[in-house]
Length: 483
Image (cartoon, rainbow, N blue to C red; front, side):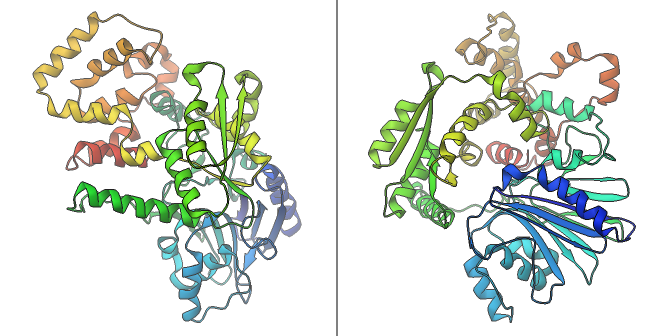
Protein backbone atom coordinates (compact mmCIF):
# COMPACT_ATOMS: atom_id res chain seq x y z
CA UNK A 1 0.00 0.00 0.00
CA UNK A 2 0.96 3.64 -0.37
CA UNK A 3 -0.13 6.74 1.50
CA UNK A 4 -1.00 10.28 0.49
CA UNK A 5 -1.29 13.60 2.34
CA UNK A 6 -1.91 17.20 1.35
CA UNK A 7 -2.67 20.76 2.40
CA UNK A 8 -4.52 23.56 0.65
CA UNK A 9 -4.26 27.05 2.13
CA UNK A 10 -7.87 28.30 2.06
CA UNK A 11 -6.95 31.98 1.88
CA UNK A 12 -4.92 31.33 -1.27
CA UNK A 13 -1.76 32.74 0.29
CA UNK A 14 1.65 31.18 -0.31
CA UNK A 15 3.39 29.73 2.73
CA UNK A 16 6.05 27.69 0.94
CA UNK A 17 8.61 26.69 3.53
CA UNK A 18 6.11 26.42 6.40
CA UNK A 19 3.75 24.26 4.35
CA UNK A 20 6.63 22.12 3.12
CA UNK A 21 7.64 21.42 6.70
CA UNK A 22 4.05 20.79 7.72
CA UNK A 23 3.23 18.35 4.92
CA UNK A 24 6.57 16.65 5.55
CA UNK A 25 5.52 15.90 9.13
CA UNK A 26 2.20 14.54 7.86
CA UNK A 27 4.04 12.32 5.41
CA UNK A 28 6.44 11.03 8.06
CA UNK A 29 3.44 9.69 10.00
CA UNK A 30 2.68 7.17 7.24
CA UNK A 31 6.18 5.92 6.44
CA UNK A 32 4.93 2.39 7.16
CA UNK A 33 2.52 2.64 4.20
CA UNK A 34 5.28 3.30 1.69
CA UNK A 35 8.77 2.22 2.70
CA UNK A 36 10.24 2.48 -0.82
CA UNK A 37 10.06 6.21 -1.59
CA UNK A 38 8.84 9.59 -0.39
CA UNK A 39 7.85 12.52 -2.57
CA UNK A 40 6.79 16.12 -1.86
CA UNK A 41 5.66 19.03 -4.04
CA UNK A 42 4.52 22.57 -3.20
CA UNK A 43 3.13 25.32 -5.37
CA UNK A 44 1.50 28.50 -4.13
CA UNK A 45 -1.23 27.55 -1.64
CA UNK A 46 -0.93 23.76 -2.07
CA UNK A 47 1.41 21.03 -0.81
CA UNK A 48 1.15 17.36 -1.79
CA UNK A 49 3.19 14.42 -0.50
CA UNK A 50 3.12 10.64 -0.58
CA UNK A 51 4.83 7.48 0.60
CA UNK A 52 5.24 4.80 -2.06
CA UNK A 53 5.19 1.03 -2.02
CA UNK A 54 6.48 0.31 -5.52
CA UNK A 55 4.46 -2.26 -7.51
CA UNK A 56 4.19 -0.99 -11.11
CA UNK A 57 6.89 0.93 -13.06
CA UNK A 58 9.43 0.74 -10.26
CA UNK A 59 11.90 2.99 -12.08
CA UNK A 60 9.66 5.85 -13.22
CA UNK A 61 6.57 5.85 -11.00
CA UNK A 62 7.74 8.47 -8.51
CA UNK A 63 5.17 10.87 -7.07
CA UNK A 64 3.94 13.56 -6.89
CA UNK A 65 3.63 13.26 -10.67
CA UNK A 66 2.61 15.87 -13.23
CA UNK A 67 1.41 16.21 -16.82
CA UNK A 68 3.62 17.39 -19.71
CA UNK A 69 3.51 21.11 -18.92
CA UNK A 70 3.51 20.67 -15.11
CA UNK A 71 0.10 22.28 -14.65
CA UNK A 72 -1.67 19.23 -13.18
CA UNK A 73 -0.18 17.29 -10.25
CA UNK A 74 -1.29 14.10 -8.53
CA UNK A 75 -0.66 11.93 -5.46
CA UNK A 76 -2.21 8.47 -5.72
CA UNK A 77 -2.68 5.45 -3.47
CA UNK A 78 -3.86 2.27 -5.13
CA UNK A 79 -3.75 0.46 -8.44
CA UNK A 80 -5.62 1.01 -11.71
CA UNK A 81 -6.14 -2.38 -13.35
CA UNK A 82 -7.29 -1.14 -16.75
CA UNK A 83 -4.53 1.42 -17.21
CA UNK A 84 -3.03 -0.25 -20.32
CA UNK A 85 -6.36 -0.01 -22.16
CA UNK A 86 -6.95 3.53 -20.87
CA UNK A 87 -3.47 4.54 -21.95
CA UNK A 88 -4.14 3.38 -25.52
CA UNK A 89 -7.46 5.22 -25.57
CA UNK A 90 -5.88 8.44 -24.28
CA UNK A 91 -2.96 8.23 -26.70
CA UNK A 92 -5.41 8.13 -29.62
CA UNK A 93 -6.82 11.40 -28.25
CA UNK A 94 -3.37 13.03 -28.38
CA UNK A 95 -2.08 12.55 -24.83
CA UNK A 96 1.63 11.87 -24.51
CA UNK A 97 3.03 9.58 -21.81
CA UNK A 98 6.48 9.69 -20.24
CA UNK A 99 6.19 6.66 -17.95
CA UNK A 100 4.56 3.22 -17.85
CA UNK A 101 2.82 3.85 -14.51
CA UNK A 102 -0.90 3.73 -13.84
CA UNK A 103 -0.52 7.04 -11.98
CA UNK A 104 0.16 8.98 -15.17
CA UNK A 105 -2.96 7.44 -16.74
CA UNK A 106 -5.10 9.13 -14.07
CA UNK A 107 -3.55 12.52 -14.84
CA UNK A 108 -4.42 12.30 -18.53
CA UNK A 109 -7.87 10.87 -17.74
CA UNK A 110 -8.49 13.97 -15.62
CA UNK A 111 -7.29 16.23 -18.43
CA UNK A 112 -9.65 14.45 -20.84
CA UNK A 113 -12.77 13.93 -18.73
CA UNK A 114 -12.40 16.26 -15.73
CA UNK A 115 -14.30 15.24 -12.62
CA UNK A 116 -15.93 12.41 -14.57
CA UNK A 117 -12.58 10.60 -14.80
CA UNK A 118 -13.17 8.16 -11.89
CA UNK A 119 -15.96 6.55 -13.93
CA UNK A 120 -13.31 5.33 -16.38
CA UNK A 121 -11.02 3.84 -13.73
CA UNK A 122 -11.16 0.17 -12.80
CA UNK A 123 -9.29 -0.39 -9.62
CA UNK A 124 -8.77 0.58 -6.01
CA UNK A 125 -7.76 4.16 -5.47
CA UNK A 126 -7.65 7.32 -3.44
CA UNK A 127 -6.03 10.22 -5.23
CA UNK A 128 -5.75 13.99 -5.09
CA UNK A 129 -5.13 16.21 -8.12
CA UNK A 130 -4.25 19.88 -8.01
CA UNK A 131 -5.10 21.77 -11.20
CA UNK A 132 -2.95 24.93 -11.21
CA UNK A 133 -4.79 26.90 -13.98
CA UNK A 134 -8.20 26.12 -12.44
CA UNK A 135 -6.87 26.54 -8.86
CA UNK A 136 -8.85 23.43 -7.98
CA UNK A 137 -8.18 20.48 -5.71
CA UNK A 138 -9.93 17.33 -6.89
CA UNK A 139 -10.08 14.19 -4.71
CA UNK A 140 -11.63 10.81 -5.50
CA UNK A 141 -12.11 7.45 -3.81
CA UNK A 142 -12.78 4.05 -5.40
CA UNK A 143 -16.22 2.50 -5.73
CA UNK A 144 -16.22 0.35 -2.59
CA UNK A 145 -13.76 2.31 -0.46
CA UNK A 146 -10.82 -0.08 -0.43
CA UNK A 147 -8.42 2.84 -0.14
CA UNK A 148 -8.97 5.26 2.79
CA UNK A 149 -9.20 9.04 2.54
CA UNK A 150 -10.03 11.43 5.38
CA UNK A 151 -10.12 15.22 5.47
CA UNK A 152 -10.78 18.22 7.68
CA UNK A 153 -10.50 22.00 7.82
CA UNK A 154 -8.44 23.62 10.56
CA UNK A 155 -6.24 26.67 11.02
CA UNK A 156 -7.34 28.14 7.68
CA UNK A 157 -6.29 24.99 5.81
CA UNK A 158 -7.92 22.02 4.13
CA UNK A 159 -6.06 18.84 5.11
CA UNK A 160 -6.38 15.33 3.71
CA UNK A 161 -4.58 12.06 4.38
CA UNK A 162 -4.71 8.29 4.19
CA UNK A 163 -4.60 7.91 7.99
CA UNK A 164 -5.71 9.81 11.06
CA UNK A 165 -2.27 10.40 12.56
CA UNK A 166 -1.29 12.55 9.58
CA UNK A 167 -4.27 14.81 10.31
CA UNK A 168 -3.87 14.80 14.08
CA UNK A 169 -0.21 15.85 13.94
CA UNK A 170 -1.50 19.31 13.04
CA UNK A 171 -1.85 21.30 16.31
CA UNK A 172 -4.88 23.20 14.98
CA UNK A 173 -6.96 20.04 14.61
CA UNK A 174 -9.05 19.48 17.77
CA UNK A 175 -9.38 15.98 19.19
CA UNK A 176 -13.06 15.94 20.08
CA UNK A 177 -15.02 12.69 20.27
CA UNK A 178 -17.89 12.38 17.80
CA UNK A 179 -20.61 10.94 20.04
CA UNK A 180 -23.00 10.24 17.15
CA UNK A 181 -20.25 8.17 15.54
CA UNK A 182 -19.79 6.19 18.76
CA UNK A 183 -23.52 5.52 18.80
CA UNK A 184 -23.33 4.16 15.24
CA UNK A 185 -20.26 2.12 16.16
CA UNK A 186 -22.07 0.46 19.06
CA UNK A 187 -24.86 -0.42 16.65
CA UNK A 188 -22.86 -1.79 13.73
CA UNK A 189 -19.28 -2.28 15.04
CA UNK A 190 -17.94 0.36 12.63
CA UNK A 191 -18.21 4.10 12.00
CA UNK A 192 -19.99 4.69 8.67
CA UNK A 193 -18.80 7.35 6.23
CA UNK A 194 -18.78 10.29 6.15
CA UNK A 195 -18.51 10.24 9.95
CA UNK A 196 -15.34 9.41 11.85
CA UNK A 197 -14.69 9.00 15.55
CA UNK A 198 -13.65 12.67 15.65
CA UNK A 199 -15.83 15.72 15.34
CA UNK A 200 -14.87 17.76 12.29
CA UNK A 201 -12.86 14.99 10.59
CA UNK A 202 -14.63 13.18 7.77
CA UNK A 203 -14.19 10.20 5.49
CA UNK A 204 -14.75 10.78 1.81
CA UNK A 205 -17.42 8.12 1.16
CA UNK A 206 -16.69 5.37 -1.36
CA UNK A 207 -17.64 6.18 -4.98
CA UNK A 208 -17.50 9.94 -4.26
CA UNK A 209 -15.42 12.85 -5.41
CA UNK A 210 -14.60 16.08 -3.61
CA UNK A 211 -13.89 19.32 -5.48
CA UNK A 212 -12.46 22.30 -3.60
CA UNK A 213 -12.43 25.62 -5.42
CA UNK A 214 -12.52 29.16 -4.02
CA UNK A 215 -13.00 27.77 -0.53
CA UNK A 216 -16.17 25.88 -1.52
CA UNK A 217 -16.40 22.09 -1.18
CA UNK A 218 -18.58 20.07 -3.54
CA UNK A 219 -19.01 16.34 -2.87
CA UNK A 220 -20.64 14.13 -5.51
CA UNK A 221 -21.36 10.43 -5.96
CA UNK A 222 -20.13 9.09 -9.30
CA UNK A 223 -21.28 5.44 -9.07
CA UNK A 224 -23.74 3.17 -7.31
CA UNK A 225 -24.90 -0.40 -7.67
CA UNK A 226 -28.02 -0.87 -9.77
CA UNK A 227 -30.09 -3.92 -8.81
CA UNK A 228 -32.97 -3.12 -11.15
CA UNK A 229 -31.30 -4.59 -14.26
CA UNK A 230 -31.58 -8.36 -14.15
CA UNK A 231 -30.21 -11.00 -16.51
CA UNK A 232 -32.66 -13.75 -17.44
CA UNK A 233 -30.22 -16.63 -17.80
CA UNK A 234 -30.00 -20.21 -16.53
CA UNK A 235 -28.05 -21.21 -13.45
CA UNK A 236 -25.56 -23.04 -15.68
CA UNK A 237 -24.97 -19.93 -17.80
CA UNK A 238 -24.70 -17.79 -14.67
CA UNK A 239 -22.03 -20.15 -13.28
CA UNK A 240 -20.02 -19.94 -16.50
CA UNK A 241 -20.27 -16.15 -16.54
CA UNK A 242 -19.19 -15.98 -12.89
CA UNK A 243 -16.05 -17.97 -13.66
CA UNK A 244 -15.25 -15.69 -16.59
CA UNK A 245 -15.66 -12.58 -14.41
CA UNK A 246 -13.69 -14.06 -11.51
CA UNK A 247 -10.82 -15.10 -13.76
CA UNK A 248 -10.69 -11.64 -15.30
CA UNK A 249 -10.75 -9.97 -11.87
CA UNK A 250 -7.86 -12.11 -10.64
CA UNK A 251 -5.88 -11.73 -13.87
CA UNK A 252 -5.78 -7.93 -13.77
CA UNK A 253 -4.75 -7.99 -10.11
CA UNK A 254 -1.74 -10.16 -10.92
CA UNK A 255 -0.10 -7.40 -12.95
CA UNK A 256 2.89 -6.61 -10.76
CA UNK A 257 6.64 -6.06 -10.92
CA UNK A 258 7.12 -7.38 -7.39
CA UNK A 259 6.55 -10.81 -5.74
CA UNK A 260 2.87 -11.64 -5.33
CA UNK A 261 0.96 -14.19 -3.23
CA UNK A 262 -2.37 -14.82 -1.53
CA UNK A 263 -3.91 -15.18 1.91
CA UNK A 264 -5.56 -18.60 2.13
CA UNK A 265 -8.08 -19.52 4.80
CA UNK A 266 -9.55 -22.52 3.01
CA UNK A 267 -12.96 -20.86 2.74
CA UNK A 268 -14.80 -20.50 -0.55
CA UNK A 269 -13.69 -16.91 -1.17
CA UNK A 270 -9.92 -17.18 -0.78
CA UNK A 271 -9.91 -20.69 -2.28
CA UNK A 272 -11.59 -19.41 -5.45
CA UNK A 273 -9.01 -16.63 -5.75
CA UNK A 274 -6.11 -19.05 -5.25
CA UNK A 275 -7.61 -21.48 -7.75
CA UNK A 276 -7.77 -18.75 -10.39
CA UNK A 277 -4.25 -17.59 -9.58
CA UNK A 278 -3.00 -21.15 -10.05
CA UNK A 279 -4.75 -21.36 -13.42
CA UNK A 280 -3.19 -18.09 -14.58
CA UNK A 281 0.33 -18.54 -13.19
CA UNK A 282 3.19 -20.54 -14.69
CA UNK A 283 4.74 -20.95 -11.24
CA UNK A 284 3.31 -22.27 -7.95
CA UNK A 285 1.29 -19.58 -6.20
CA UNK A 286 2.70 -18.49 -2.84
CA UNK A 287 -0.04 -18.91 -0.22
CA UNK A 288 -0.07 -18.02 3.47
CA UNK A 289 -2.23 -19.26 6.34
CA UNK A 290 -2.42 -18.58 10.04
CA UNK A 291 -3.65 -21.17 12.50
CA UNK A 292 -4.47 -21.11 16.19
CA UNK A 293 -4.30 -23.81 18.85
CA UNK A 294 -8.01 -23.35 19.52
CA UNK A 295 -9.53 -25.62 16.86
CA UNK A 296 -12.80 -23.65 16.79
CA UNK A 297 -10.93 -20.63 15.41
CA UNK A 298 -8.29 -22.36 13.27
CA UNK A 299 -8.80 -23.02 9.55
CA UNK A 300 -5.39 -24.44 8.67
CA UNK A 301 -6.74 -27.90 7.83
CA UNK A 302 -9.05 -26.40 5.19
CA UNK A 303 -6.28 -24.18 3.85
CA UNK A 304 -3.87 -27.10 3.68
CA UNK A 305 -6.29 -29.09 1.51
CA UNK A 306 -6.65 -26.23 -0.96
CA UNK A 307 -2.89 -25.66 -1.02
CA UNK A 308 -2.36 -29.33 -1.86
CA UNK A 309 -5.11 -29.27 -4.50
CA UNK A 310 -3.50 -26.39 -6.38
CA UNK A 311 0.11 -27.34 -5.55
CA UNK A 312 0.87 -23.94 -4.04
CA UNK A 313 4.07 -22.85 -2.32
CA UNK A 314 2.36 -22.84 1.06
CA UNK A 315 3.48 -21.21 4.32
CA UNK A 316 1.57 -22.08 7.46
CA UNK A 317 2.19 -20.74 10.96
CA UNK A 318 0.46 -21.56 14.22
CA UNK A 319 0.45 -18.54 16.53
CA UNK A 320 -0.71 -17.78 20.02
CA UNK A 321 -2.16 -14.30 19.61
CA UNK A 322 -1.88 -11.87 22.44
CA UNK A 323 -4.40 -9.24 21.44
CA UNK A 324 -3.39 -6.98 24.33
CA UNK A 325 0.15 -6.69 22.96
CA UNK A 326 -0.88 -5.79 19.41
CA UNK A 327 -3.84 -3.57 20.30
CA UNK A 328 -1.81 -0.33 20.39
CA UNK A 329 -0.58 -1.03 16.86
CA UNK A 330 -4.08 -1.83 15.58
CA UNK A 331 -5.58 1.21 17.30
CA UNK A 332 -2.94 3.50 15.80
CA UNK A 333 -3.54 2.30 12.26
CA UNK A 334 -7.34 2.11 12.35
CA UNK A 335 -7.44 5.48 14.08
CA UNK A 336 -11.03 5.15 15.29
CA UNK A 337 -13.29 2.51 16.88
CA UNK A 338 -13.36 -0.70 14.87
CA UNK A 339 -14.68 -4.05 16.10
CA UNK A 340 -13.93 -6.68 13.45
CA UNK A 341 -12.08 -9.46 15.27
CA UNK A 342 -10.52 -10.57 11.96
CA UNK A 343 -8.09 -7.66 12.42
CA UNK A 344 -6.06 -9.86 14.79
CA UNK A 345 -5.43 -12.85 12.47
CA UNK A 346 -5.04 -10.47 9.52
CA UNK A 347 -2.27 -8.66 11.38
CA UNK A 348 -0.39 -11.89 12.01
CA UNK A 349 -0.77 -13.32 8.52
CA UNK A 350 0.29 -9.98 7.02
CA UNK A 351 3.45 -9.95 9.13
CA UNK A 352 4.45 -13.37 7.86
CA UNK A 353 3.40 -12.75 4.26
CA UNK A 354 5.49 -9.57 3.99
CA UNK A 355 8.62 -11.60 4.62
CA UNK A 356 8.04 -13.37 1.30
CA UNK A 357 5.98 -11.16 -1.04
CA UNK A 358 5.03 -7.50 -1.48
CA UNK A 359 1.44 -7.93 -2.68
CA UNK A 360 -1.15 -10.47 -1.48
CA UNK A 361 -4.63 -11.12 -2.85
CA UNK A 362 -7.46 -12.26 -0.58
CA UNK A 363 -11.13 -13.16 -0.66
CA UNK A 364 -12.48 -10.30 1.45
CA UNK A 365 -15.94 -9.11 0.41
CA UNK A 366 -17.23 -12.42 -0.92
CA UNK A 367 -20.04 -12.67 1.63
CA UNK A 368 -21.13 -9.10 0.88
CA UNK A 369 -21.19 -9.82 -2.86
CA UNK A 370 -22.86 -13.24 -2.77
CA UNK A 371 -25.14 -12.97 0.29
CA UNK A 372 -23.07 -15.42 2.30
CA UNK A 373 -24.01 -14.39 5.82
CA UNK A 374 -26.65 -16.09 7.95
CA UNK A 375 -28.50 -12.78 8.22
CA UNK A 376 -29.18 -12.78 4.48
CA UNK A 377 -30.89 -16.16 4.74
CA UNK A 378 -32.76 -15.04 7.86
CA UNK A 379 -34.03 -11.88 6.16
CA UNK A 380 -35.40 -13.88 3.25
CA UNK A 381 -37.12 -16.34 5.58
CA UNK A 382 -38.65 -13.55 7.67
CA UNK A 383 -40.05 -11.88 4.53
CA UNK A 384 -41.90 -15.07 3.60
CA UNK A 385 -43.47 -15.80 7.00
CA UNK A 386 -46.85 -14.23 8.02
CA UNK A 387 -46.47 -11.38 10.48
CA UNK A 388 -48.65 -13.10 13.09
CA UNK A 389 -46.32 -16.08 13.15
CA UNK A 390 -43.31 -13.78 13.48
CA UNK A 391 -44.88 -12.07 16.50
CA UNK A 392 -45.53 -15.43 18.12
CA UNK A 393 -41.88 -16.31 17.58
CA UNK A 394 -40.76 -13.03 19.14
CA UNK A 395 -42.86 -13.76 22.22
CA UNK A 396 -41.51 -17.31 22.40
CA UNK A 397 -37.93 -15.99 22.34
CA UNK A 398 -38.44 -14.65 25.87
CA UNK A 399 -38.58 -18.24 27.15
CA UNK A 400 -35.37 -19.37 25.49
CA UNK A 401 -32.31 -19.62 27.77
CA UNK A 402 -29.62 -17.01 27.39
CA UNK A 403 -26.05 -17.87 26.44
CA UNK A 404 -22.69 -16.16 26.77
CA UNK A 405 -21.60 -17.92 23.56
CA UNK A 406 -23.11 -15.75 20.84
CA UNK A 407 -22.33 -18.47 18.27
CA UNK A 408 -24.34 -21.17 20.05
CA UNK A 409 -27.54 -22.44 18.40
CA UNK A 410 -29.74 -21.19 21.23
CA UNK A 411 -28.21 -17.69 21.16
CA UNK A 412 -28.62 -17.44 17.39
CA UNK A 413 -32.20 -18.70 17.50
CA UNK A 414 -33.09 -16.23 20.26
CA UNK A 415 -31.57 -13.36 18.28
CA UNK A 416 -33.38 -14.46 15.13
CA UNK A 417 -36.79 -14.60 16.81
CA UNK A 418 -36.38 -11.34 18.73
CA UNK A 419 -36.04 -9.27 15.56
CA UNK A 420 -38.14 -11.24 13.08
CA UNK A 421 -41.38 -9.32 13.70
CA UNK A 422 -39.76 -5.87 13.37
CA UNK A 423 -39.76 -3.76 10.23
CA UNK A 424 -37.27 -4.64 7.48
CA UNK A 425 -34.73 -1.90 8.44
CA UNK A 426 -34.99 -2.54 12.19
CA UNK A 427 -34.77 -6.29 11.71
CA UNK A 428 -31.56 -6.05 9.69
CA UNK A 429 -29.99 -3.56 12.09
CA UNK A 430 -30.83 -5.83 15.02
CA UNK A 431 -29.12 -8.80 13.39
CA UNK A 432 -25.90 -6.95 12.60
CA UNK A 433 -25.72 -4.86 15.77
CA UNK A 434 -23.38 -5.37 18.68
CA UNK A 435 -25.86 -3.54 20.95
CA UNK A 436 -29.59 -3.17 20.40
CA UNK A 437 -31.39 0.13 20.94
CA UNK A 438 -32.76 -1.20 24.24
CA UNK A 439 -29.29 -2.19 25.43
CA UNK A 440 -27.85 1.19 24.48
CA UNK A 441 -30.67 2.87 26.36
CA UNK A 442 -29.51 1.17 29.56
CA UNK A 443 -25.82 1.87 28.85
CA UNK A 444 -25.98 5.57 27.98
CA UNK A 445 -25.84 8.32 30.53
CA UNK A 446 -28.27 11.19 29.94
CA UNK A 447 -25.34 13.38 28.85
CA UNK A 448 -24.07 10.84 26.33
CA UNK A 449 -27.57 10.25 24.95
CA UNK A 450 -28.01 13.98 24.43
CA UNK A 451 -24.59 14.52 22.87
CA UNK A 452 -24.93 11.53 20.54
CA UNK A 453 -28.38 12.84 19.55
CA UNK A 454 -29.49 9.20 19.73
CA UNK A 455 -30.51 9.10 16.04
CA UNK A 456 -33.82 7.43 15.22
CA UNK A 457 -32.30 5.79 12.15
CA UNK A 458 -28.78 4.54 11.62
CA UNK A 459 -27.17 4.88 8.17
CA UNK A 460 -27.57 1.11 7.82
CA UNK A 461 -31.33 1.43 8.27
CA UNK A 462 -31.57 4.36 5.87
CA UNK A 463 -30.49 2.33 2.84
CA UNK A 464 -33.29 -0.15 3.50
CA UNK A 465 -35.81 2.64 4.14
CA UNK A 466 -34.91 4.39 0.89
CA UNK A 467 -35.13 1.24 -1.26
CA UNK A 468 -38.40 -0.54 -0.38
CA UNK A 469 -38.88 -1.49 -4.06
CA UNK A 470 -35.93 -3.91 -4.02
CA UNK A 471 -36.32 -7.55 -3.08
CA UNK A 472 -34.92 -8.28 0.34
CA UNK A 473 -31.60 -9.82 -0.73
CA UNK A 474 -30.86 -6.99 -3.17
CA UNK A 475 -31.74 -4.44 -0.49
CA UNK A 476 -29.40 -6.13 2.01
CA UNK A 477 -26.54 -6.33 -0.49
CA UNK A 478 -26.97 -2.66 -1.36
CA UNK A 479 -26.89 -1.84 2.35
CA UNK A 480 -23.77 -3.95 2.90
CA UNK A 481 -21.95 -2.31 0.01
CA UNK A 482 -22.59 1.18 1.35
CA UNK A 483 -21.65 0.65 5.00
